[in-house]
Length: 198
View 1 (cartoon, rainbow, N blue to C red):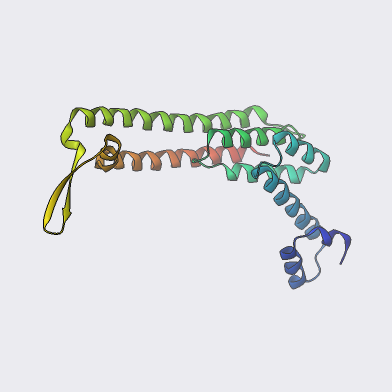
View 2 (cartoon, helix red, strand yellow; view 1 turned 90 degrees about the horizontal axis):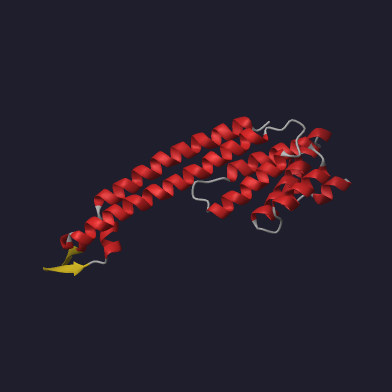
């Protein structure tokens, strides 16, 4: 085995053995992929912060690594991310952009801000709708009872306000429509962001 092969994971070495001798370019791509996986693993687990990621990538000095790590960070953005997770990945994406020869920082930052705003707007709309339905449930005691069949008997069960809201079809429909609409918007925002990465 060559020196570079000892740095590969056992799975990568096994794959390598199956496919035979690789070209130098393929070997480098495989090594780069391993480096990217390692760096992102450390980043996602919180072992390194965006600044440490920046330092490690700067030390590598390979533009192909920059693009790969940045693209994978963008792919890892999800609509369900917490604001802290989103901020951390955002900082990582922007830190990597600052290492590139041709930077597109302002446009990328604008797209990332749109994604954050989308998430905030989604949360605010859900909270506003929940509060409106809550007021309706508080005013109407009939909405806080539920009939439950137990054998031959029918029982009336008193629900808490939160339980009553979750039982309402209008609330479930609203949530379903919101998730669908915002997931689509989020997907479009991610695609716009990906197009700006160079």
